[in-house]
Length: 168
Image 1 (cartoon, rainbow, N blue to C red):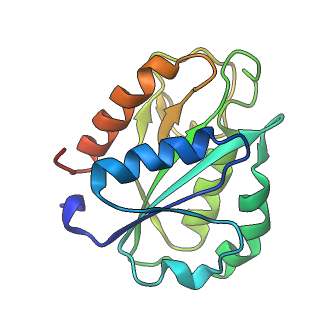
Image 2: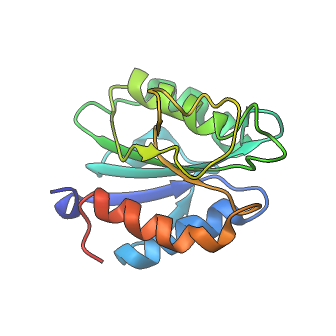
């Protein structure tokens, strides 16, 4: 079902890891990943499925481009839109705030009327706390750790896209 929706991929990235993950997702879906920096909320208007990617900066903070976009997201009308999130974090150096920005982004999406899709199991990760874990044992979206588990990224992306209904 999801695979037939008009889809867009947006990301914010500081070190390039989130951009690289967005590019991998885009390549598998024959789409173009777009940087959220400098965008306004009307960029979402033409899409039925939004794939949004964010790293968690420092100790649980939003990545700066997403942080600047928060007022736009608060004004956005995402009613009727499905939103799949992917987040990047470091579960060893930041075990008390792993993927927190993805959890914060999820809250903003829900507040704007979007329907979250693509929850991901917490199995295989070692962390103490995460605002991205809204229900026990599930992250609100795909969890990637390029610092500690880069060898798992490609398989995780492929599996996640399949759960969203895409045929790869």
